[in-house]
Image (cartoon, rainbow, N blue to C red; front, top):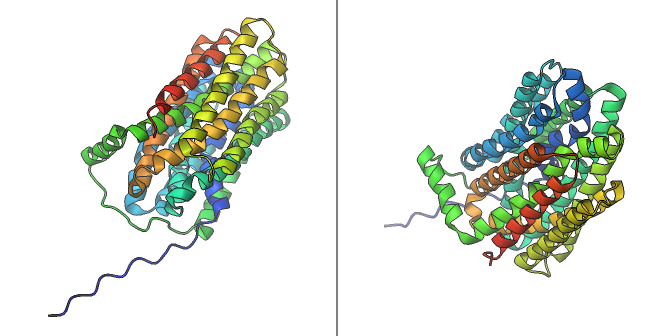
Length: 397
């Protein structure tokens, strides 16, 4: 009796271009950043209040959070590529619906649709990076990914301000629709499938059980909370930036875009530092160092505001310091949680993305509801996020 020969292993996947993975992951948050400088102009044009207009930021984050729970398991079963293309299609549809919107409720609905499509880019981009990386290389590649993907959103507010000043707020969505259409074409032409081990699609109960299994793991829990606090706490600044910088400090919409650019570039600097430290410093130590920088930046901002020293420079300097900490903490937290179970990279990315954006929605809602033309609500929100991340990292090993 002959022993059947084992089935051959699947061939190694064709390398996925890192620049395209960067573009895919970045696309999910570009619509959030690029619209920030146009919030005030859109509110005037649609005859709505700043609070109602801020829903286009908060509910975008809610959509990003909820939608990510779906994309991970679907991409684990059907492959990253077809699920990604479906998400990009929804994203483009939402952008096209936003362009002619004449009422705030229509614009909010279009923004929700954008977010439900864009969140697929966040989940699947991270999962593809993990698919093609070893556990020891994950922190370095995710740091490179973070550094590069934050560069374009850093430019996005400045671009949004220029488009708004030159052509009006609707031009922001016209430009972004062109970018998403181009990216969809590049995915069709240049992106291979990276999921070599598709899994059976479980029922809803099994999906929830998988998420609970990840949440029961203390290391996953620690890095997820820390990463979520770092990754989206600065969205609180983006939500109030036009009203704080314009209303309190007399900046123009274009200047607000460049102010946001400066802050987000701090994240690029922090991610660059994370890249340099990836092979020399353990993930936990690097994450805790980033968190300490965040704590210092938030505390300094609170001190500046309560002392009556608030100016454009004294507002942006602590925020820049905080952003450097975010750039160092974020990639290390993501690498730590994705290494807990590499065979469930899609589900881990989904759950992290959901919690990250859910935290971000809470942060923006708190600071918008509490907004009193001072920087205190923002400073307290950032300080609370940094303290929560510090508590979580005590459980990471």
